[in-house]
Length: 84
Image 1 (cartoon, rainbow, N blue to C red):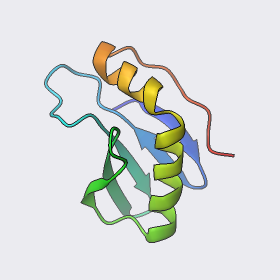
Image 2 (cartoon, rainbow, N blue to C red):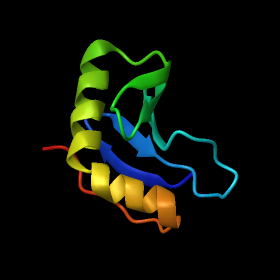
Image 3 (cartoon, one colour):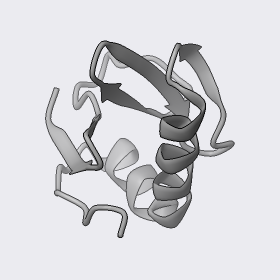
Image 4 (cartoon, rainbow, N blue to C red):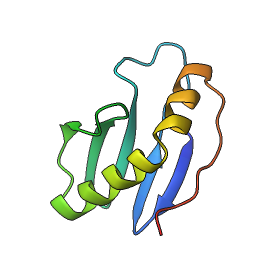
């Protein structure tokens, strides 16, 4: 699972294979916590991220929504800048 970005101790990853399941989403790893965030809605639909980490991940995903959806659609990987 390629790393898309890294910031504030969080690692953002996305699967890049045709068999990946919908909805389009990112994987957020933060220490022993993990979550799956729907790119389109920004909601965590699986996982246990702490409230603050989830808020930062959602902010980042919203800022890069178009790029993330394009990567999901085309399966062309690129690194995205961290949240600043």
